[in-house]
Image (cartoon, rainbow, N blue to C red; front, side, top):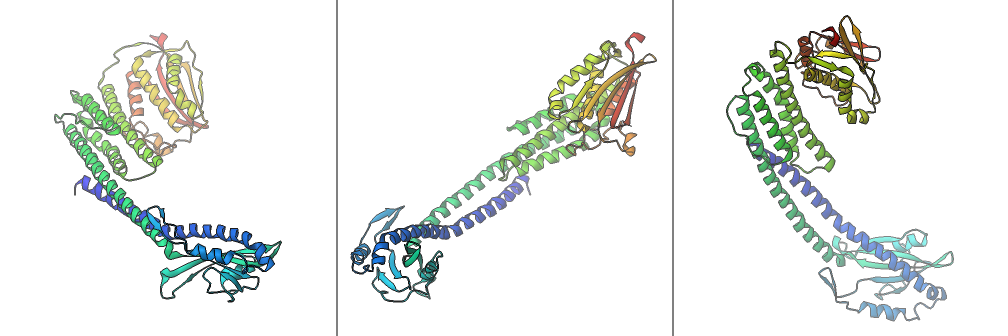
Length: 477
């Protein structure tokens, strides 16, 4: 099955299930949400009426007042209100008042006056000083015929002298619920379809770009001529540029041929990581998680580029018979420049860095190779030094040589690894990330030392790790 179809199917499954779950959840919340809002309004209405009726109930003249005629007139009103596309043509509240014993004193329908409502929860709980409410069906055989009742106490000081209840049939809310459900269904369905369409386009675009890059990478690894494919998108474009630089550096260098198989093998892991991150980016996810996958693509692209460049540099050093230039290289200035270049990284980790090399101390050799070698050692030291740790450079003269020492605070190197650190492609996991490097840095340093007639020594020291380079002293020439 093509990659694009697989990406789309996974995206379809994710978006479809997520959309269905969200839509069904929201649908289920519409009905109780509307009823909760209505109940809140009934609470306000009941408490307002309780204050209005207090004096008449207390005086015992509730039935002799104007309230019965007012309620009768209220029930005959026709609002003709347009509420969110639904026309309201009649009022639906039922209002009844009971005394302190639960006997109905007044009923807007005129049917319950004199009856004992003391056992209904709205009246019973309110007379107890609790929140009184109930939902009772008008027709026991029709679950949609339920009516909400909310009561409020009529108070005379601290004494409850009666209860006023306000009722509203749930069927009057049904048009608004159905309208909301219809609109939500259309909008939700449209968003799901739009999301799937976008997912299909992204799947097609990403799989097409990955196919181009895959074919190009295969052609490069096979030594064939191939034109760099044009792909849009920052990370994919960077990947294409990194592979193109790899090809440019490999072409015309016959001595690199013995590394091709190893290089191809080493590229599988970052390419797989990039493809996996790219596939995951097709789905919906939080912004922080999306940025993490984008960063993974950038890191793996940089890893491939670093692997190629270091391998070529190592191959060039191995092919040399001697140094191309021999000049006096001030060690203090060289180390200071390297530390300055890494100052942002040093500051972010709050490292304590010390350069105690004598400014007058110089060595004899090729400046570029020494710069690259010490830079590799400093990178390793910074990778393994914990937050707030220390890094120290020092040097001393000894028998016509300079011994440069780099100490960094770190966990001790395991015994099994000490003898293998300079092997090609051997690397230990970095404490901060758990990732391994290309495994070419120390091998490169060892080759540079051999060209200079020097040595490389790595050992554990109290509190950390110590690397020693022995180089020819400049005034020994």
